[in-house]
Image 1 (spheres, each protein chain N blue to C red):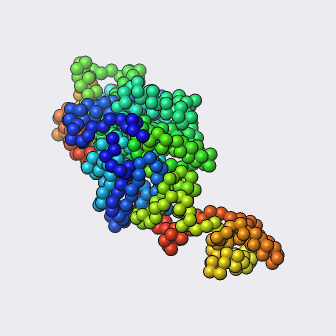
Image 2: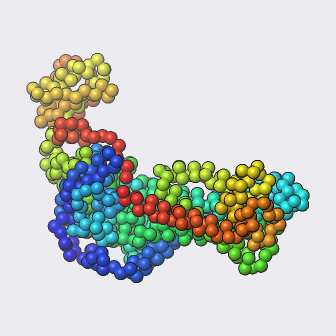
Image 3: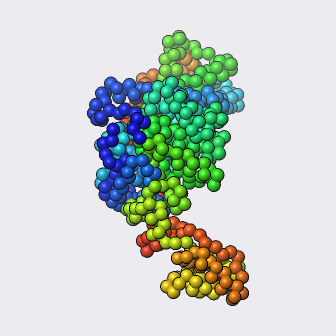
Length: 325
Length: 283
């Protein structure tokens, strides 16, 4: 029974901490059945938004609905329809993995038998059956996070919030968690995830909203966003610091008349946005060779989140610490 | 996509108070189960937490005790009888640091957030902690009692008086659970909660736990005599019929009443504070 067209909807959502505005009129409209990404730098207001939607924080202004229910007026009902994977992995390190899931099942009042059955199902779903009797403190980061994810899915929630699900994990752990997240929408769950990794948003999300300073900037599909952010970047790492100015001039020339190369003196690198990556790469290689400039590295790469922001807003992201919550 | 969502009631108001109370009790039990499972899976917790009082027993009874004249009948006379009730009371008093630590840990590790995002009764986070800590304190007392009995300590009063003394000890612990919960939510992180021991130390030692306040300088003696820990220590001495000479402090002739009223006063102040702190997590 759907009471709303949107799994999550906010209008002019605000949150004020003293004189700091963590959220400053955030508007979200998340349709059902998608993985929706909230992308932004630290301090953009992502965590604050999730905490309000998960009924942990009261907004200072505006409205927020989850599954058609008002989060401030009907928090208890909202809690029956959501799952939350917080920034911290909230599993009990002393209980076994299975006891952890049974504990949360009991707190959802699933009953003893159902809790145990659900626990075993979820352990199997996330590849943890073999570790069911072990305490999570012996697990790898990726395993702990998968158990954490299983714990947020006991009720098969309508809306699942994932707050930076892979921050602090090694590459293997990130891949494990990504794989676990991908299967979720097939079961009918709408996922709202926050991240400050462009590649994570790109790989997992059906739609992405970029937020900064507590406001939404752009909403698009991953492909649309990539088009807006701009193409690939040509990056050249100099072998000698003295060569940097020459390389910067060369890179600008290869990219086209108005392109300005960014110079990172500490990293000895020069980067510039290019329209046709492969052509720019070959031209740069030829130029470097004809001028006999030695370089440490030459390649194409995706823009970073900072560069994307520069492109979208013409300004650096807020970049300050995530608001305490 | 349908069929996966469990049935929910249509309006928040449709839940009766009785149903809510039932949830609250069940959730409290579930949280208590979690805490007790910790203890059964990690019995070494008791060794860590009781190590300090046991060391105190041995040090005071065998090292310093022989030099202390607590009864007026000579140094070292009946010091075990004097010190044991004090150590019971001190262990109860220091217990609030365990509560605060557990609360701060749950907050820092995101456990409290997960609980608060679930449909469980919000009160269970606090009540579950309280019941679990009280059960834990009971086991602490039984273990200390066993050690006291091995050392030759005996309760001199009736069974009812002895049980009454243990009741007063747990009554003190209960009131300090609310202090612990309040402080646990108040402190910024687990490290700060660990430092609370520095607060507990004077609370435990500037008291009648190890020495009669009469032997201290006047102003310090008054503080020690009026310390809630002294009230419980002194009242349990009375109920255990331990040989302690009553001193000149007025409160020392009303120890049982003080041991009943002090924790009540602490509860009346800190229970609302703890609840308010918990609710303010949403601010």
